[in-house]
Image 1 (cartoon, rainbow, N blue to C red):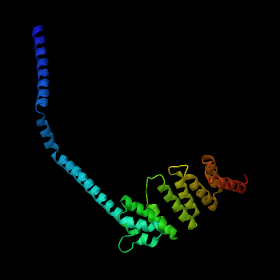
Image 2: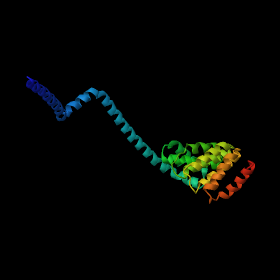
Image 3: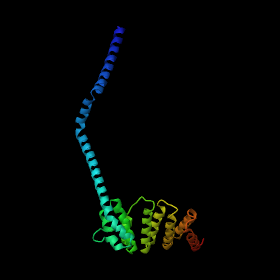
Image 4: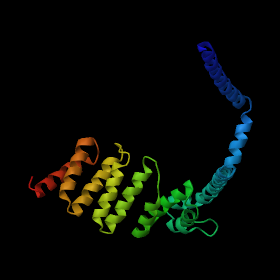
Length: 241
């Protein structure tokens, strides 16, 4: 009797194992059945996701083609304007000569391209030379670059325009941005010297003293160091130190 029960129990276990193996074998042998069932169940969501993905790829490809073609146009149109800028013919550089567009038009129409972005820098500099300080700030502030030198230069030029407008606190902020942008031994000390002067003009003598100290300590061989040491002494006297 005991033997029959054990045989029955063994048979049940064997049947269960066989069912599991059969189910696994069925899944392995015919995965398409399960894939089709999954697709039928989630068909709508999958179709929507696929459409969105394809649309995204198409938009990216279209945008890349558009920006590349715009870049080529901007480059071809910018050559003559830059020539006028370098020749100091600022009116023609900014507004064009009737045959070629000026830097303002290029900056406004192709602002999303590298050449259009660079045109903003040129427009800012030209306006600064002409004493149009608000216009200079507008274009220089809209300019953006990861270049080691030109971005810091743009910040410094905005500071120059702010100084001309007697907005010394704002000037100090832009000179500080210039000095802190990828510091280097070639140009940073010049931005620090401008920062010191703007801080003095805005009566921030403690800030000016700290900046003088930074210039003297970090850039001991800089040409601006002599002026910095002299001015540092004057600020220390004014503060009673």
